[in-house]
Amino acid sequence: MDVVARHLAAIDRLRTRDLPAGGAGHHTVELETGHGPRAAAADDCHALREAIAQHLGARWGEAPPWGQLTLRLRLARGEEIPEPWATLCLRTDELDVWQAEGVWLAVGVADRDEADGTRLLATVTSTPPP
Image 1 (cartoon, rainbow, N blue to C red):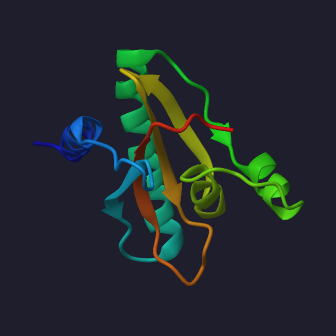
Image 2 (cartoon, rainbow, N blue to C red):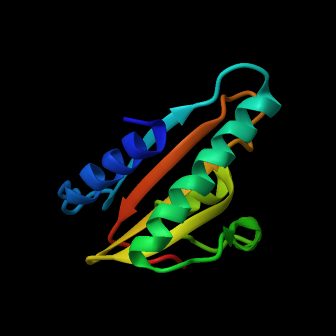
């Protein structure tokens, strides 16, 4: 199984998990961790995100990447942003987002923190994006 197919299968499993009742209301998983020099690892994770987005777009419709700058500005002004969106906007620059079968799915590359590794993330939530 190639890496994109493996990640699509992981996303499908994530979508079928029950969301925590009365708790976080979302699940986030690390699909891939970048290896090697930071720039190359980020490029690899972004390429994987784009490949996954193409497949998911074929399933549920094309969705333009959703930039996170506006959410970060809203947070900086003191606005309350619901989870998981608040954390995702601090970790990613853009997300691919779909609503499918009653849940929201977001896929993005967490590469904003220089002290942290580059990670390809997938999140499933019942909370709509703000």
